[in-house]
Each structure stands twice: as C-alpha cells, then as structure tokens.
Image (tube, rainbow, N blue to C red; front, top):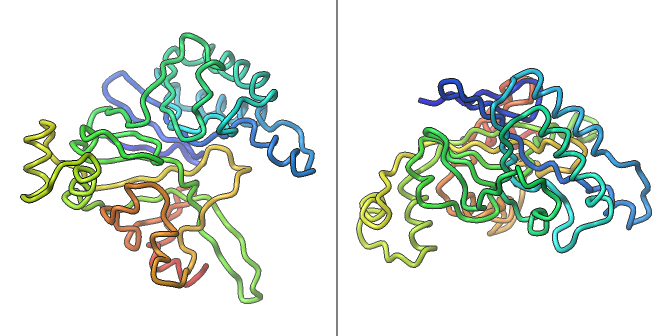
Length: 283
C-alpha cells in the first residue's frame, strides 16, 4: 500500500513509490486579493508569502514531482493583471527546485494555461492515478479508473473545523479529513452520471464497462495551501431537510458514497480532533 504522508505542519502531503517522491498541494488561489480590492479592501499580494511557504516545504521533503491539485489561480472567468504578473514568476521560481511540475485543473483554472511555462504539464480535471492513490480536484466527477485505487484525495472544499467557547466566541482551524468510503455506492453514482443503467451490482458493471476493479475504501480532503482563504466548517450544525447536501460541495461528496459523519479530522500538526459527528457539538 502506497503511504500517504502529510508534511506537518503544512497543508501538503508526500506520496512515495521507490525513488519517486510526489509532493501534492491544493487550492493556492493565487491572486485572490483582487476580489478584496474590488470590494474596497486593499492588501498587498500574498503570492510571495505563499511561494516562500511552498519553497520551505520543497526544501523539507525534496520531491521529484510536484502536483497542484487544482485552483492554482483565483479568478474564474478571466485573467487579472496581478495573475499575469505573479503566476509566471511563481512557476519560474518553483521550476528551479522541482524538475517535474504538473497541474490538475480545478474549477478556477479555466484560464490558467497561458500563464504557465511550457514545461508544466496540464492534467485533466477527471484526475490521475499514482500507485494505489487517485488524485482529483473535487468539483467534478473523477475518471472511473480512479475507483480502482484504494484511496482518493481531493481539494476544493477548504475544510475547517469551527470551535465555539462558553462565551460564544467562534474560531476556525484548517483540518485534514479522512473518511470511510462506500465504493459500491460511489461506483453506482458515477456510472449513473455516465449514463450507465445500474441493474446489477456496480462493481461488476465497473469491471465490464471500464475494466476497473473496484478498490476504493477511503477518502481524503486536503486543506487549502493558501491559509488566508476562508474555509468550510465541516462540523457546522445545519437545519432543514437538505442541510447535509448543502453542507457538501462536489458530486462525490453529494453521492452519499463518502461517510462524512464518521470522518476523522486532524489539525495540520497531526493532532486528532475526533470524528465530524463528535465535533458538531463544538461548532
């Protein structure tokens, strides 16, 4: 089994197979300050600070490959002037330290390609397989091939846990989420999305239609590498008939194949906080 190793105390993880060391980070949202400026809040670009943090992680784990797990940039429909300035310089600096850089496209990355050096490889939003781990951003369905992996890893959610003290003051902390995954249920939802009528068990159809042996049993959600962003408190108590579905974003989480209630939450330093259902009493 390929080990999944968070790089404490950073929102980054390392996958290692033989001599290959793959560093994975998600949700940088470079240029996010522009949105604040448009609302009248003026702060300097945070891209240099994000770059400095990533360079520290690279120095610590010495990867042979770096995968950005979606949402490298922030503006969705256009390229802001700040992104034209900052993103090419950002990748030029990273390229001096890591020989192989890959970007798996997220929902904010539609206009990213013109900003990247030719040496950076673009990966599809449907994901990529490394050993027995499937990587995808999380805003769209993954490729059926990823369901043959034991573990799936996504970003997109910016997971956080909310705490409220006896005085009513609320604070949030970034977390890693590790959840049990019902592979059969997830496969059924994916097959139906692809237009396959599921009359028999989904694992059989997955093998017959896509030559994939169902193997997925656990699901990881990465915290955003950009710590200045807001997040989604996954332990928030919500009311109403569709409260749980509104709390989850992305088709995989909404499929019911990921058991969020029994998911485990960990701080960036590795501290185990409890399951999400237990933590709802604190939010």
